[in-house]
Amino acid sequence: MKTGRLLPHPIPYQGSKRGLTQRILPLFPRGKVRLFEPFAGSAAVSIAACANDMVSRVVLSDANEPLMELWKRITCNPYELISAYKHLWDAQLGKERLYYNQIRDEFNQNHNPDFLLYLLARCVKASVRYNSRGEFNQSPDNRRKGAKPETIAKHILGASRLLKDITNVRHGDFREAIIDANPEDIIYLAPPYQGVCNRRDNRYFEGLPFGEFVAALRDMNRRRLSFIISYDGRTGEKTYGNMLPDELNLRHIEVEAGISSQGTLLGRNASTVESLYISPALLKRIDSSRIDKSQPVRQAQLSFL
Ligand SMILES: C[S@@+](CC[C@H](N)C(=O)[O-])C[C@H]1O[C@@H](n2cnc3c(N)ncnc32)[C@H](O)[C@@H]1O
Image (cartoon, rainbow, N blue to C red; front, side, top):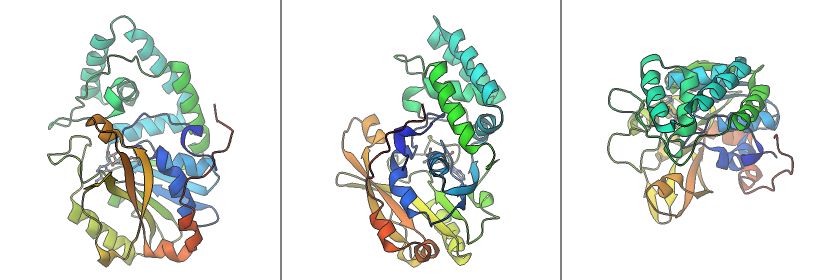
């Protein structure tokens, strides 16, 4: 199975599930399915599922519109995006900090997805931050210039090859994104974390109140949809967020997610355990040995690079 660093990862994104794909893919039913990823971010699960030939179609969606415009560029116009990134990257040399601030100001006016890629490649820990007016306000990481154009080009082309003919890109609320999902499909949900920050969550365009999320899951169960959720977890002894309620009949498992990036940001180095929840309809489609397989797997030796 090809997972993790063996796969293209064109959009640097804090909260990416790239490190968890080896635990998530074994939970897919056999045969090729249509996959919905309505909290797409860096689309780590869709890329991994395509690379392992597990999907017939992919629906990628996220509330962050410029991010989804970037996914359209990756899937439909990868060479234009590569050349735009190279132009931005070269133009910054010798005036990196000033240039970053200028592009960030322009991005907040025009929402140009090429600018978003440059900002994500250059900002602190690839972690998006928005102010109360919805403006991108993350600072640059002044020790780095951002991924070199030739490196990002390989990732963009790798992802584009996997996704281009089978992917539909949308933007908006996750409930809209899955409106046409049916019981044959599989849905992977990675909503914003509840825990970690108690104040308004400036990591995302939109937050997601716990009660609203639970109500949506109740409706998805009523529609007999097959879904997997990554939702909070714990670092050492510290648990983040509420567990999803028993009334949803979800199977809860915990998987090792390595050192938490949020923990690192907060100056702690504790290993993180992430909670995965499997819907009752999906449990009926997979045998229980698949859940045991949601364990570390030996990486294939091939790399896409
Ligand atoms: C934890 S990140 C997803 C990470 C992603 N799975 C990856 O591998 O990179 C959560 C995402 O949810 C999006 N989001 C927040 N509220 C949303 C909503 N109500 N509907 C759809 N997307 C939302 C954010 O823009 C963010 O990209």
